[in-house]
Amino acid sequence: MTQLEVPKAPLSPNSARSVQMKEKAAQIRKSFQRPKFWVLGFGWCLAACAGAANVIAFKSWHLYASHVTGSTSAMAFRLEGYHQGEYGSESLKEACFLVLSFLLGAFACGVLIDKNQVHFLGKAFYGLALVLNSTLLVLAAFLPGRLLPVCFVAAACGLQNAMCTSHFGAIIRTTHVTGTVTDIGSTLGRISMVYLRKGCRRSRLDDVERAEVGVDGRKLGVLFGLWSFYFIGGLIGIYMENVVPSPPQRVLLLPATFTGSLGVFYMACRQILKDYIKKLEKERFESDLEEAQKVLSHMGSRLQTLEHSDHLVVEWDAEMGHMFKALHEVETGFEILCHQHSQVLEQENST
Image (cartoon, rainbow, N blue to C red):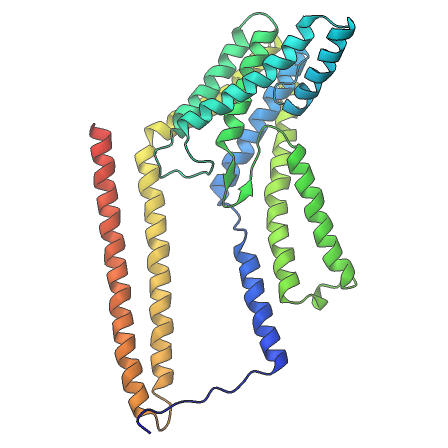
């Protein structure tokens, strides 16, 4: 024989099924990655701001700013009443302008942020969007009348809601919690059914079921945090209204201060944040590369222990040398790419 062939022992049906289940469980775990803590904190704080703004809008003008569903239903209801002569055109105009204002706020976000995903390394103007959100709330706090101020609050809610569309596949809505509560209920239902099928004993869960429960548990943490902070923001808004002198819409300055400060900070420290995030990505890449090298080295040492396969060991050793060289080239290329990217950014800033 010119080439030594190492026969592969066939897997038993149970072993093959176990391997398939482990692969499926790994895919399920990769399907959802919980956002980083600072991203969660950012979303939760914005949810609290929206909760406070919505409560103050109703307290001040008896209109909810972020309830597009309710405003759309009110349009149909008021339109029917207008034709029946039961309502005037003023109530219909209020519902229409609230929906339009929310839409315009989301439109402004689409102009400033061209991707519906949180990504701080692109050209998206997150800082400007936050400052614009703050400006709308400040104007609403001082504008006279009833409809115009609440329309500014609705536009701020639309802008914020579009800005926080998604991150790592998790839908994040920070200005209303209907979808959030829906997702919490359906996720709890899935977890309950998994445990009920296994007699409420975790030890009976297989790998796939454990992965599903783990992913749903991480989703619950994100969703319940959003609902909780929205509720807390509403409480803060109500209690602050009792402290701040009349009129109550002045409390809108509280969420406006937070979003405005965050926007100014982001614009001032944008390059620092980008360098920090790139540093984290590079460290993670180097860690993965080092782990891959360790695995390949371990494979090489194990191959050397094979008996009667000297020719195969030589071939594998040569192939591993090529793999190590390729991995180092990938690392070098990654560093060059980062350097080129930083040069492009410097040129863009200079122009």
